[in-house]
Image (tube, rainbow, N blue to C red):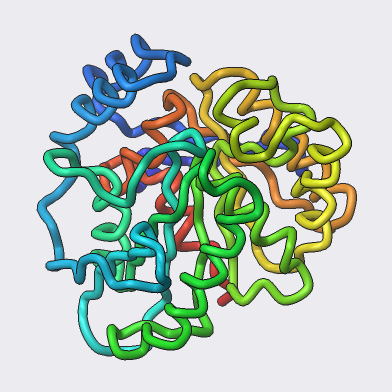
Length: 302
C-alpha cells in the first residue's frame, strides 16, 4: 500500500525491514548532510530541519506531574480526552548525563506526546535522574516509579493502564532496555519500542558519558548487559535503528536482534530508518514520515 509512501520491504526473516523515507527532498538532503555527526550542533540542525513538518499542537499538555521526590521526577501528559485509550510513555535521550522531556523553543520531544494524542492515545513524556550523580541502576528505579504513577493515575486522563507502550531513544532506549531486562517476567507494560540504544555497555565503545552511568569495571559491565533479560521478554518489541547514525549504535541494535531472535519465534525484525540520523528518528514523529510512528501504533496486540 502506498499510503504515506511507506511500503514495507522485508529483507530477510528476523533481520530488518526498510522503509522508504517520506521526508521532503530538501529536508532529506539536510539530514543526509548532517549524517552520523553527534553533539549539540547536530541536534539543533536536525531539529530545525524537521520543525516545519510538525503539525500544530493537538492538545494542551499537563506539565510537570511529580512521580517521585527528586526534582527530575517529572512527567508531562498529552490526552485527547476521556476514555480508556492506549498510553505511550516516552523516555528521552541525552547521553546519560543530560536531556529533558521538553525544551523551550523546539518541538522535540513534545512532538511525541502530541502525536500520541493526535492518534487517539495518551502520551506521557518522562524525565529522570542523571549520571554521574545518579549511576546505574538509578533510572531503572525512576522508570519503575513513573510507570507506577501512570498505572495509578492515567485513567483520570483518559488512559488505559493495561495498554501501556514503553518507548525510549538513545540513552532513553538504554534505560528502557535496562528496566525491561530487570522486569522481564512481569514488565508492567503491554509493548515496548527501543530506538538506537545501548543494550550491552561491555561491547559499546568506552566513553566518559556511558561510563559515568554504567561504570568501567569489565565484569560489572557484563553483568549489567540488558541482553539476557531482553531475550526473556515476551511482550511485543519494536527495535529500530537509523541508517545514518554512528556504527556502534547500529551494532548494538544488531546484538539486540541476535539476542531476541535466539530466544523468540517469530523473530521481530529491526526497523531500518532509511534516510534518518540518530536524532531525526524521533524528532520526525508526527511528520509525514510515518515509518516509526506507524510501528508504534501497530505494537499493541490486537
